Image 1 (cartoon, rainbow, N blue to C red):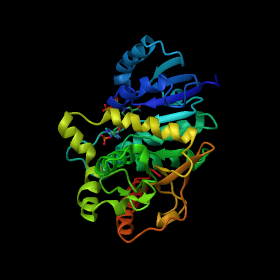
Image 2 (tube, rainbow, N blue to C red; image 1 turned 45 degrees about the vertical axis):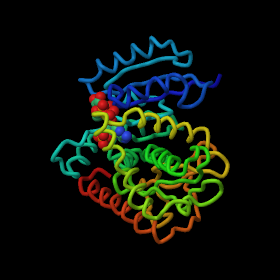
Image 3 (cartoon, helix red, strand yellow; image 1 turned 180 degrees about the horizontal axis):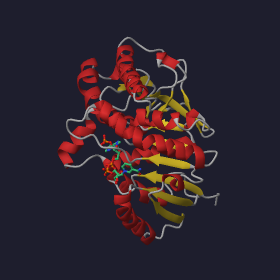
Image 4 (cartoon, rainbow, N blue to C red; image 1 turned 90 degrees about the vertical axis):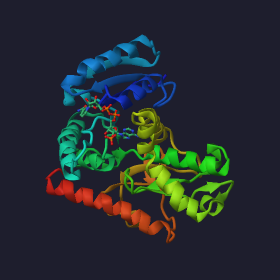
Length: 327
Ligand code: NDP
C-alpha cells in the first residue's frame, strides 16, 4: 500500500459529483493500492446533500477510503490536497451573456485558486471540469502564483472519448485499435477533433473515412454530443463526464502508453500558434506524473483554420476575464 492521497471534489452534491465520488473511493482514480482521504466542498445550501452522499460512501465500506470530510470552507477544503477536481461552477442560465457567466465563475475560481495556493500539497494537481472549463482553469491558475502553472488543467477527455467512440463505430474497430487521436482548442462547440494524426491499424484515420463524413458528421456529432444527451435523457451527461475526469487524472498519474497520446487542456507554451499562457486542449503525453504537449506535428490545411477558430475563442474569453480583472 502507498501513502494516502487527499482528493478534493467541489460541487460534490451535484450530478457529476454523484457519479464521480464512488469511483474515486473505490480506487479507480489513482490505482488499487492508494488509500484516499476525500474532501467534499459545497456551497452552504448544498452541504446537507453532500453529507448524504458521504453517508452512502461510508456505507460502501470501501477498503481504500480512509476519511471523508464535507465542508463549505474553501481553505479547509484544499488543506494538504494532492488532487483537486473542480466540478462545481455557475450554470449557464437562459439569456445569460458570456461575460456574466465568466464573471460569476470568477467569483468561484478566484478564491479556489487562492485557497489552493495557500493550502494545497506541494505536488497538487488540479483538473477543472466546471464550465467554461478552460477559462475557469485560467482564472484559478492566475491566483495560484506559487503553484507551477502546468498543474492546472481543463477537461477535454470527454470530447476525446466521444471522438474515439464515434470513430470506432464508423470503422467497426475496437477502441484499443485507435491511437493518437487529439482534441484541440476549447471545450466548447468550436473544439476540433483531429483525425489527421490519429492512426487505426497503423494508417492515418482521416484517410480511412470520407471527407464529408469527417466535416459534416464526425466533427459536429462530437461537438454537440452534450446537447444530444440532454435531449435524449432529459438530464446532462454526468456519468460520462465523471468517467472522463477519472481517465484524465489516472493518465496524469500513471502515464500514457508508449507511442500513444491523449487530450487535455493544458497551459500553452506557444506551440502550434496557441498563445502562451492560454489553457487549450492539445495532444498530450503523460510521463513521470506530468502532462507534456506533443511537439513537432505538422498541421494540415483542413485542421489549421479549425484549430485557429477554437483558439481565437479562448483568446476572446481571456480578454473578457482580463477586462473583469479576474486574471
Ligand atoms: P453537474 O454536476 O451536472 O455539472 C457541474 C459542472 O460540470 C457544470 O459547470 C457543467 O457545465 C460541467 N460539465 C462539464 N462537462 C460536463 C458534461 N459532459 N455534462 C454535464 N456537465 C458537464 O451540475 P449540478 O448542477 O448537478 O451540480 C453542481 C454542484 O456544484 C451543485 O451542487 C452546486 O451547489 C455546486 N457548486 C459548488 C461550488 C463550490 O463548491 N464552491 C460552487 C458552485 C456550485 P454546464 O453548466 O455547461 O453543464
